[in-house]
Every structure is written in C-alpha cells, then in structure tokens.
Amino acid sequence: MANTQTPHGFQPFEFEQVYSISNGKRIKSRSSYASLVTSKDSIVWAEDTGDKRRAVFKLYHHRGPISWWREKFFRFRVQREFDALCYLFQNGVPCPRPHYWSYGYLPGLGRCELLVTSEVPDSITFAEFLQSSEGANQASNVCALFRLIRKMHRSGFYHGALWARNVLVTTPDLRDVSFHIIDTPSSMRFSKDLYGTRMAWADLLNISTSLRKLFGADSCEQYLIEYGLSERLIERFKTHLIRYSPSRHTRNRLRAEFEVRELVSHFCSWCTGIHRIKAAKPLHRKASNPICSE
Ligand SMILES: Nc1ncnc2c1ncn2[C@@H]1O[C@H](COP(=O)(O)OP(=O)(O)OP(=O)(O)O)[C@@H](O)[C@H]1O
Ligand SMILES: [Mg+2]
Image 1 (tube, rainbow, N blue to C red):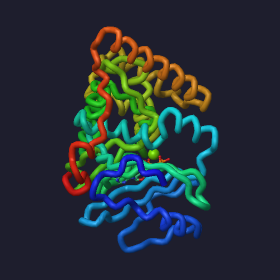
Image 2: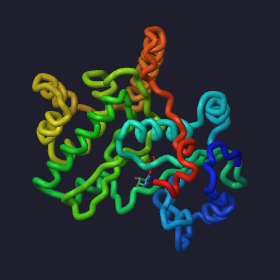
Image 3: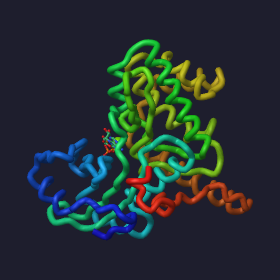
Image 4: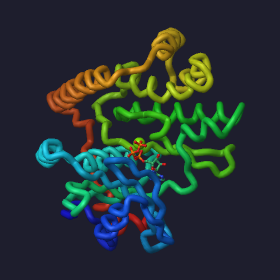
C-alpha cells in the first residue's frame, strides 16, 4: 500500500491481516478488534491503536479501474473524506478526528482505499437513537443536532449524504448526548454560508426524512426553527418533505448542479481575492502523533 498520509509514530494496520480476515468471508474478531460494517465493497472496523485509544478503519475494496484512475488523477474518495473531516475539525464541527488515508492493491481485495479516523466511543447512529429515545429528551437533543447542522452550513460545508445513519450520537445516559458527523466523501465546500441555498435544503431534507417517517412532517417544525428557517420557508420545506423521495437520477442531477455551483463559488472567491475557502490542512502536520495527542 502506498501510504500517503502516515503520521509519525503511528503504526499502520497490518494490511495482510485485513486480507486474511476478510478473505475468510466472516470477519473473525480479535481481542482488540471489532467489525462495524461489512458490505460488498467496503469493510469498516475498529481497532486498538496501542495506547488504549481506538481508531476506525474504513477500507473500500474492489475499486473499478475507471474510477480508480480518475481518482488517482483528481482525488481519491478517502482523500476527499479525509480533507472534509479536517475541514469540519478545524471549523469546530464535531466529527471523528481524521488520522490518515492510504491506497494500494491487496491480493483478493483488488484496488483498495483506506481511511483511518478516531473512534467516537459509546456511539450509536442517529437512526438507532431515534428508535431508542423518546419524548422531551429526544426533542431537545434533536434541536442540538439542527444547531450543529446550522454551524456546519455556516462554514460553507455541504455534507451530501446527511442521512440518519451518517450521524453518530454518544449516549452517556440518553439525556446529555452529543452528535458527530461522519461519512463525508460526497461533501463540498463553498465560500459562503449555505443558509437558504439548495445545498442546505438538500441536507435538511435528507436528515428530516427519518424524522418524517417516524413522527410525521410536522414534528420537524421545532427543529427547523432551531436551525433558523423562517416560518414561510418552514411551510415550503414541509410541503417538499412530504413527497421527498429522490430517485438515483435526481440525486445525480443535483450532484452535478452542486459541483458546478462549487466551482463557481471557488472561482468567485478567487476573483474577489477573498480566499475564504481554506484548504483543509492535514492535522498531523500540527501534532507529531495525533492519535496520542488528542
Ligand atoms: N469514527 C467512528 N466511531 C464509531 N463508529 C463509527 C465511526 N465511523 C464509522 N462508524 C460506524 O461504522 C458505520 C459505517 O460507517 P460509514 O457510514 O462511514 O461507512 P459506510 O460504508 O458509508 O456505511 P453506510 O453505507 O452504512 O453508511 C457507522 O454507521 C458507524 O456505526
Ligand atoms: Mg455511511
């Protein structure tokens, strides 16, 4: 594996072990190792990193040749995710601390990409949280999530896959919870606050879909107020939300549109000399050993 972002002092995972483990179909569990998700094209697992901290490893495997070469030329999927997490981290939006990304070829797994982040301990997904909590506690917690989304949008960050399974909730006792944003390869960065834009609208529709399915569209009203939408926009939003079920084609079309908008946004900020879209800096340049220095 070509290891492009390995911080000092951190021993990368032994990739051969991944191979032997995943080759045997069922992922075996070692004492320090926990499988989180396995799908046909990715494996996510958590692993001790030596000083009792745990890191989450996300390995995309069997990457197709066309996307592989395209990404090699532009940016790898894990690299986009890494940069996005660095950006969120630097803008004070809670997310797992990104450690490094890597790519290479593994026998049996083909072309692979790997992203390593810190683990959010004792967390469940927002989707699971909605099923497990109830009443007033849940409402006040969900308000906190919408404030967090507002903060994310204020920094010009569009998530692009803000589904309930891509938000983690830490649950000390289901009363005092905190949220973390994960899974950011589809994200984009703009030079201005996204309030009222189609990008913000799309993120809000995605996250509100789970709430609508469980509690109805009206339940979102208090959260949208917390986000800062005006009454008129909330009414419009609810009408959209009721019939929101984007097809693959619609999602692709929106993505293409947002990519053009992102380009224009970069170009405008470059023209006006306001370089507000800060390049995300790898965090490990600041800390000699990020895993230990958190
Ligand atoms: N930093 C983390 N700390 C704790 N758990 C994590 C972390 N990152 C990922 N997970 C767990 O792994 C699951 C999958 O992660 P992620 O969403 O990044 O991968 P994915 O391949 O996109 O999966 P999916 O398609 O289900 O969204 C999450 O739902 C979460 O339960
Ligand atoms: Mg995900």
